[in-house]
Image 1: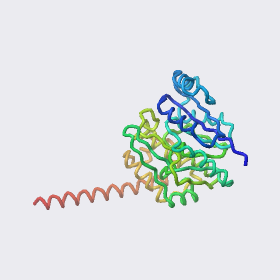
Image 2: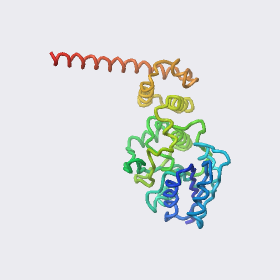
Image 3: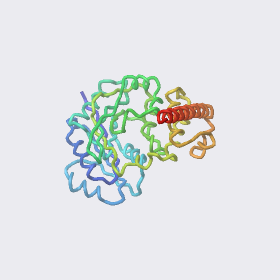
Image 4: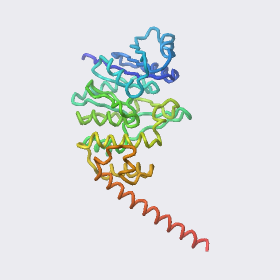
Length: 309
């Protein structure tokens, strides 16, 4: 059987400690038919020098960006340089968990010709505490996503792009996004072909709570979260099933940022009026939810006062 070339695309930015773990895990893989493409957003020559000193005999296609592209444009640039039929994104702060991880990814695509997208479980390493845990994937999550890929808006159980491999296609990461860019990519890929495969093993270890991560600038940021979730709704409104699961996501989102009207939401997402019916339904549910919480709180206070008496 002819082996398929895998393009391992590594968009990098500083952090050579993480990059070393990443590259070491690549070069120990038992599956050898791969190319390594590294696109460097670092403002200086730190990574160029690091590669020359540490991997002089390894074939790495290195591209230094004259001007930092940022995420996810740097991811797309790496993909644009790929020659393989299988594309494997591997962020510079993630790494293959085992030496046969790549082989297992490849096997899923080789053995399932109708499948174009594969993901595995991830081991998640906290950079601060060095503790590990695993993401959770249930049969219900898989079944709902097979029926409706936009279900992923309700929660990213697939994890980082590093936990995926896919056949070369025309889908790219949406450069308007930062926080939910991975969700958007998965949805776009699966809307092209709903058949996907899941490997119930942590083939990838991803880094969490690292200071350099773009997600740190997105967490608890209404200008990012409100805009991007509303943008996803607009982008996929023809495919989305506007059900209770989705309503709960936006109920929590609006509650967290104290958004209670279309006018307030429009400050963060100008086209909010385009899905006025859905958002209005969420706001009504929010008012009921707030009333219920107030009633429970009032009853609790009355009960405590009576106890004290």
